[in-house]
Image (cartoon, rainbow, N blue to C red; front, side, top):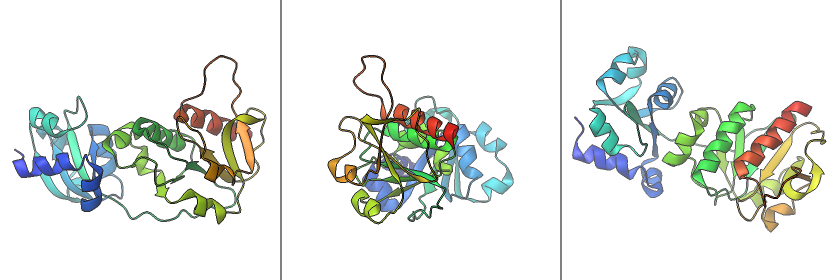
Length: 247
């Protein structure tokens, strides 16, 4: 059974200001929790059904500060994920550092991505294509939001997201900077030379004027139909697929 105080604490972590104050976030669902237990993240509290906890190894449990067994009904009541009938973990945030990129590395730069589902999918897509670093503007939605963590499907464990003012970051960089626009070089024909930074703009406004001045290569995804624009996560996937096919 879980106490009212602990239930309230877990629900508070669904709100950004409480996550920042506690430096903790939520991981929900059996698969994501299993993966987190096997990672180098520190688990503060593990909440799970008897069936879930019985399947966790003693080695994994030894890394957990606190374990609470609950019923499926109790778990559903404190979870922000529909149909979470297995487990939830309260996880310590890591200290993020500016990424160290080799000359051959590519990284994503996110200019004010606001939709949690988009950010989560972009992280998952980056993981699929072997991109380990994302540099995000301070206005980009919080990577530790439950909706973002859920949308990553565990990829948050392998992709680092570093928040910083993009103007300062790009000004200090000597790397090639690719930016997605409605006009530019056809991404299907572009040869990505060496490493670089790939900027993805805001869902409705695209790349901001402050960031646009640092773009060295304008690229575009050709349009054959009448849609006004592409979803930010879809555009990311198309660019990364073309990047990997031409390396």
